Image (cartoon, rainbow, N blue to C red; front, side, top):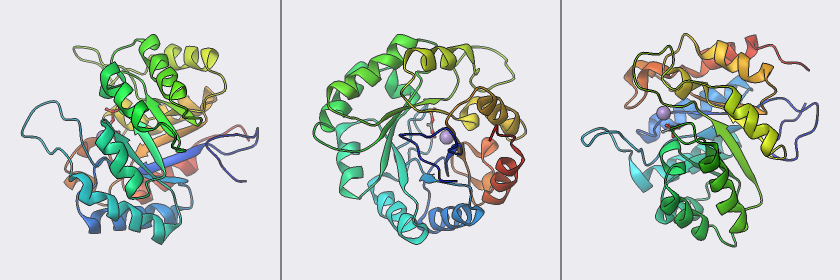
Length: 257
Ligand code: PEP
Ligand code: MN
């Protein structure tokens, strides 16, 4: 059965986007992406090129030089690529290097100035854009990004639920607060809704349960981080899994069709 992100048919499989949290080296991107393609489970490849880090001194992404690596991964696998954008320059660079899908990260969704800059850079451009929920549980801000993009003429807009930040100890890196994406589905039923168990869990051992919960709630797909050598990852090492582990995780999910 085919799987598409937009114009979904009732029997479409969940749409799976996977790839490393960050592009680190060309070899790491190509090895991870080719192994992901070999699982037969992945419909699009992801990698962070510019990373929004909490504090200075952390790895902030390889920048524009990583985009040709993703392009090459796409040529080798036949899969489309997805990259996070936070500025107009990011958008221009992604378009110049033939990236197929853009996404707005959780920190950017909470910043209307940046969102407007992205939306304006996308005027007249046909490319799907996925919008992660803001870090804090504020649905109107999430919906506002959809509206800014649509007003700029972006026709294919989707949603990614990546959980919500809360202070103090919790079982999750970002609490899923499932009622919030469910409310988004009610408010914007025509938009595809994906879940990102990686950033919800922040750890490997609970990814499968969160992915299953998303499918039980009729989400349209998943974004899950995968790395050739997860423990050695330059960002989000604890939550990444190998492409082979991703295969097994997806294979074990129960899906209504
Ligand atoms: C990411 O996808 O690697 C990322 C930075 O996610 P988020 O914006 O959800 O924190
Ligand atoms: Mn990450």
